[in-house]
Length: 278
Length: 306
Image (cartoon, rainbow over all chains, first blue to last red; front, side, top):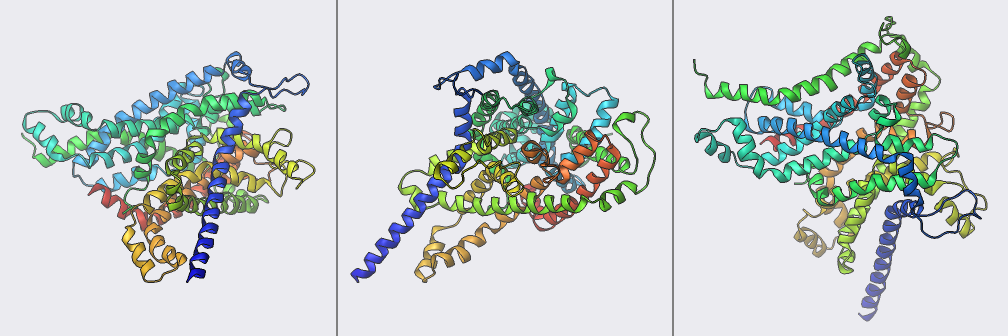
């Protein structure tokens, strides 16, 4: 009897030890890259080891300002906010139409929108490049804004349809009986109650466009017009990598996404795997 | 003339969906068809305005018969997609089980662990590549420093230039960046399993493995299958990790379909040829897509629309 208990105690010890080790590896694997980037961004990674006195410095961040890195930050903010707003407006109407009306081909339309989420954009780069070249939209923020709007709309519609189905139709019907138009219903009745869903969709859209690299690479060549991912990647173009600048620039690029992610993560997962988790 | 309420509804729905239709048409459908058209021409970047001559299936024949085709196919399907996705699912499942364990709850670390998962997840792919290139760096990188300190190696390894390590290194970057989503989604699924079911299995004398295999895993299957297919599609089409980590190098050793499309179009300037590769890629993805919709899509959509 007592041997059994002892055995269980030993097994428990091994199990807890194993789990503690797994948790330690989990922390190291997931955090080490971010930690070393942050560390690198506040250190002097100079070529001559003699000159660097060590210790903390903000030189790398100051260097970013000198290099005009904040031009990229501004471009990214402006493009992503414009694309997100446009996508949310379009999605609001589409999601309302899909969740409130019955019409032939509704399932097909929803399927096409779902499919859009998985569309390989690498295939669209050639045709879009040609359209944009002919329309004079290479090196144009407008072109990129339109692309990003198209890029994020399928998922924002999907999220908003999910959210709208939780809002009872009786709410609309009461307003319609009172003589409101559909547009009034959307903006005065639905919008106030679906703020949380819209915020989630907007945050998602912003994050998607904030980290987009491929389309920006193909459509923007002028330095003044580049977005953050492009600006960051060009530090790699030279033979000598300016590690200090890359690290500081990476921190600047990631802090906003990290802050936006905090309140959003649960909603995103629910949206991504809706229907599966049941 | 007054319209019936049903007809009025249809007209309203049409107007509300019109902007979406225009967007889907202009940025998805029409470019896809135009890409197909381009793939049968010899159009180059230098003569965009005039367009190219029709060359029939020449681009397809050239690509499928080229000496690099097999390497690119193996790189894309096996190294880029299969290795990354299977590791993402396995590690994601292990992480979810860890986060759901009594052990983490006892030491009150569940919330901390969730926050830690957010860090790689919120990191833009470009930054993820930068972070790992920094860790892998032969001169300053922490990994080489650590390995030399332990005495396992005496000379630094150039992880992203050495043929033996370059694919595992790229896989590591992708896995680091993409596994948290898998882990959080599986954790959500784990939390829907009723405690009583596991307790019942335990009372019946099921071992830990049997509990996992016959009670937990069936609950996770729907989520796992969807995550698997989503990850396959996203990874297969991904351009940024390989391009920024190695530029398809050393040489063309890590070249995949996505980087091949980009290089043929924007370095060789052969848009027509590059578009044909895009069509090949789209066909492969369409097969995956139809499987997805056949097995999960319809069920999902019906639940969603009610």
